[in-house]
Image (cartoon, rainbow, N blue to C red):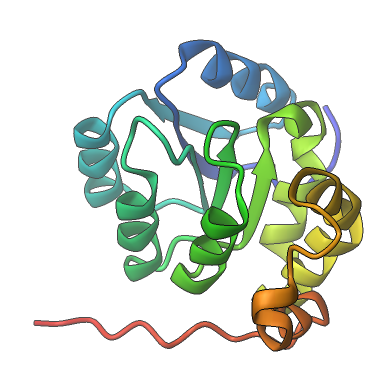
Length: 173
């Protein structure tokens, strides 16, 4: 066991692919006191979000209504990371940023997820996105093409430089 900010945390992972949840669980089993909850569908995930306090939530986009769960997690004050394969697109990345996700990772980087999760727990929202782009900017460019940021250049520059702040969450009674 190693020292990590992940020790003694409670994490919820939601994915409709059980093998992804198993891989995440294996990656996180070395952390002392870490509680790992998992769900394979929206209903179960939503009930868990409403029942527990989470230090971190990891969400798939497709198959589990990931953006709806992201919205719920952010409104409840839980930092959330989007982990996706099928919805790995500029539009999904942009929506994730705007809805308040703290990171957006392709499933092909699942084996490298621990440092991203540690960053989410230790860095501010803005600094975390800067780190994501420092680490994955080349992946985004290779998947989306060289001009992928052109349509919203100012927005992406703000995100990459760590200056983007999502709109505040307004809770209704």
